[in-house]
Length: 315
Length: 288
Image 1 (tube, rainbow over the protein chains, first blue to last red):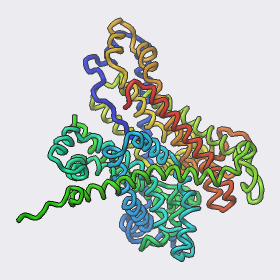
Image 2 (cartoon, one colour):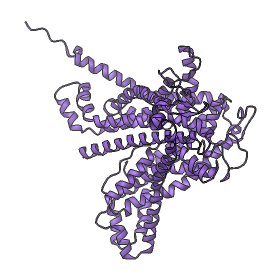
Image 3 (cartoon, one colour):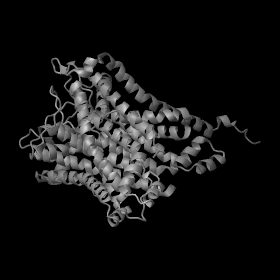
Image 4 (spheres, rainbow over the protein chains, first blue to last red):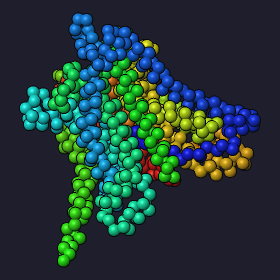
């Protein structure tokens, strides 16, 4: 989602509208107030419902042998074994590996794109880069998965001699293209936020443009750049279809980027259809979803806090 | 004897600057080339299956989908997104009006926005998981247009809410206060001043949310989609959707020609939708 900043303080604080409406006894105003409040609460109430419902359905997963530790670190994912065991170690490790690889590839390029857009590019290219990034961000996950499937997988099979080309590296590569526009646009915003007079005073000392970028602009924008990277992390963790199609969907614990893996999102999409309601598997999937939800929400809130702090510092 | 100074064009700083500049230019050009390469690739491989029959007729052949077209999938995606909009647009715009016009204090605004941002941060697959558990199973809606539309609506709500709140907040307070000073009601202000000024922003966010929802397979895979339908979409029956159809074609290795075609239709459709959103945003007095 494109981050939008809302100009603060535009709500009139002098007149509390609900109170004015009440005093004026205007039934149309009261109706609008009630309906808009109701819609607001109904919409945001969904959040509470999602969190509580998923958490409640995830709780029974702790009842299997080993509890939380077993679920997260010890047990393998073996639904067909006797007795079946549902540990999600392989899933979160795969998620971690895929995400780390994708960021390793995407962040340097995204920073380059951001520096190019805000400091170096001629106006024509600058104007072209924004729609290009939006285009990249607009391509759906499943299309990226398909694109990777027909380009990367044969390439991997031929050049690395793998029996099947699906692996964590392939998923990470495609994922890096997917998070690139999000990291780049947030990083560009951060660089643009650096005040022009800082740049100009630095130039006045006679140093090169790169010196200014490296020692003044990048340093000044560091919190914003960090926020951009963290935002990319959240996006990469939550991507589902592309990693489902490319990571190989194997339930073994991955040891290297060339192994097949099954990130959390892929685990959920693979198994949900076959999980009987209220079965152990169903609860384990809910627990995996809860883990993913908590991580991504915490990450996004960190980004928001960072952004707010930056805004208050510059204005 | 002082050493002769090297000319500035050979100094370390100058070379470093040149080197870094070249690197940054390369990444910039890569960013320009990537989307064009992906689009071009899909267009070249997918163009030859493109015809009216492909767009309008249902899948056929053995295995299913290797012949025929994607008509029901396009229709199903449109129905699902329309259903999602029908849920999310009133809720989002209503919530936006509440936040910008009626919220009693800044803390309450911040709390509700915080909740909306959390909702926006939840990955699409979690919406699918939740929709399946609550709507499909617990509320016994089964895998249906209704369950999928509600799931997509929940996913679209925070985008529309944040977008319409921003669009409403961008209307100058001078205008609304002048109107209120003349003694008109709040609802008149909302109807005759706020909405006419803010509608392009609201529409832009709704269109953006619709494009986002149309491309996501994860939320509808277990709430609304099926491999094949012939009947017209109805509330209680599952529908075909473009993203899940593409996924099925690839994962079951049915037909790569048709997969290219489906991917091309999906991407071009979403691009058009996003372009519309951009045009709408341009109608706003100032960019936010």
